[in-house]
Amino acid sequence: MDTPVNPSAVRERVSREEWDLRIELAACYRLLAHYGANDLALNHLSARVPGEPQHLLIKPPNMMFEEVTASSLLKFDFDGHPQQDSPRLRGGGLVIHAGVLGARPDLHAVFHTHTPANMGVSSQKHGLLMINQHAATFYGRIAYHTFGGFEFDMAQRAPLLESLGSQSIMLLRNHGVLVCGESVADAFFEHHYMEMACKGQINALAGGSEVTLIDEEVCRHALIQAQSPDRLANRARSWAACIRQADRLDPSYRD
Image (cartoon, rainbow, N blue to C red; front, side, top):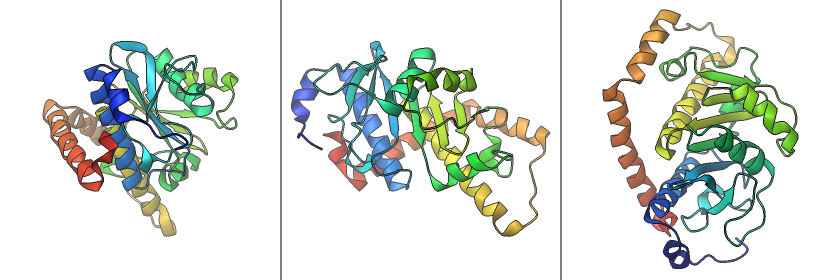
């Protein structure tokens, strides 16, 4: 961080709902760092600001995931204009995160990562295989986007959004993954399950062993199961456990 942030000053000038969201988003950054889903200071997790649908929260570009706190998150509009004292939003934050949130009012959180596992699967021609139970939860739900260079140019936003279409999960070919959700918790779980599915696929294919794929009819059934009220209620219980884990790791994310 170039300049220390005063947590109290930030908290005093935002709504209670925004501060709560800041804590949740900062917790996700810390948890993903703990689980190894970070790439130095690259990548971002973002969220739409409650009561301010044209604004998003996102980490500073010079911070690693493990450093992010509730007060260090920056607020921008979807054109990249800062809503506080900070430089304009640029690069992937503007092209991907602001682009998706601006185009998809049904989505409220966007996670973009490059991990060895999701880069590996995104580079395999067949994409995500129905090779384990985590993968089955994404049956028929994945979009694919062809790599066209680093997402630094605004001209790359339209093709990205076209590839995403009405989906909320996308494998970026030869690049990584884009996971969106109706909430921060929703995006966190979708990213977790996608990461597990990718790790399982890489491990299953290692060494050239013959593998068994899940039948399509079973995948359809598993997808219904995964979207059942009981399963969704379990996510709420798991989210509380995740917050407790973030507190055990380092409660400073709440600052």
